[in-house]
Image 1: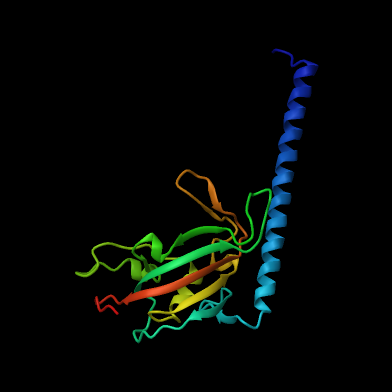
Image 2 (image 1 turned 90 degrees about the vertical axis):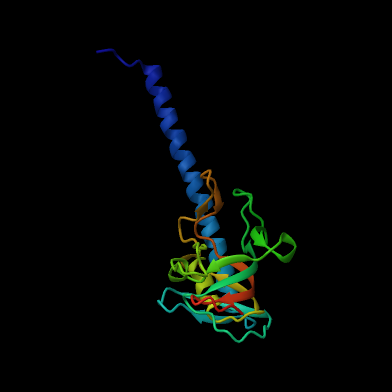
Length: 203
C-alpha cells in the first residue's frame, strides 16, 4: 500500500476546510436573505392599504391592494383560464445574490405583446375540449388565490409569502441557474384581460 505523505494530508485538510468555509458563507447569505424577506412580509401585513386573503387550504395568506377596478361580470373559477399582463419583483435586497429591492424578475406587459394565458389551477390546465386543444401553464398558489377574487379588467398588486410562491427551494431556469432564491417573499402586479371557462365561454 502506498503511503500518503504529510503534505498530501495538509492539502486534503485545506480543501475540506475551504469547502466547509464556503458552505458556511452560503448559509449566512441564505439566513440574511430569509430574514430580509420575513421583515418585508411583516411590514406589508401591518400596512392598512393591503387586504388579507386567506388560502382555502389554510396554507397561509396573501395581501393585496386594488390598483384598478374592472367591470367584468364573469367569475373566475378554479377551472377557469385567464389572459393576464403581469410584473413580478423582489421585495428585499442582497448584494451577495446581486438582487436589489424592487428588481423585476419576470414580466409580460402591454408593450410586450399579447397577454399571457394561464390556467387558474392545475384543474384548469388539464381540460382538453374543442375549445382547448392545449394545456396552458398554471401559476403558483398565491396567484390561484388572487385570481379567483378578480374579474376582467381588475389590476391588483399582490404580495405572496414563500409557502404560496416558490417555497424554500426557489426557482431555476432550464440551465439550472437560480432565478428566484428560496425563502423569497414576492410582489406582483396582475391585470386580468379576459376570462374563459371550460365550456369555452369567454369574456
